[in-house]
Length: 274
Image (cartoon, rainbow, N blue to C red; front, side, top):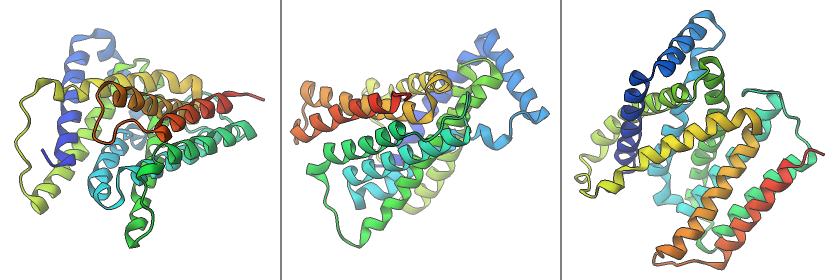
């Protein structure tokens, strides 16, 4: 479609519709939605703690704004750096479910190794320099938002006692934000290209549901930092597999493999309790 905001809106919209249908057909999910409403009305959960999906929408919006200036590599490094640093702080403050997790040497080292790993993975595609580099602040802030999103989505899951409800809230909020962003995009850039005909290009929303469901279940046990590091490790490992199975013009690089391996080390180091 040559328009990242509209593509993201379709992805979020598909996920939101599927989740709305699932909640309407599942008694336990409807009861969870009622519990969530009562928690917000009773003050146990703040309204702003239900807005984690806005951070996902902000991420894809900044991608559309900055990738053409920064390149995918610098964008990725900025997001991961913001997410890992914020993950340390969010865990330390006990923002998410579960106990607060102090900033230990192993956790700080794991976060640092993860950032280095991503830099290594994309080093052959980074072209630093130029006045446009300050745009990296936007994806870095988006990375901070991702850490916060993981934490508050976990809180919604605890209050609703259901995994589908926080996923619906996440996709619903994200869809609303992307509708507003798409309206601005439409006014500035005009209509995007027509949507593609290949049905399998629309399963991004389904995969997003799996991602958020996994996160809202796991964050209570792993904390935000470890969950974020595991997600980055999975993305880089998946990228390596995709480059092997369906290679692009650039092909699989040695730096990508080394970076993916380093993220596994980062997860292992951050998971050490002492």
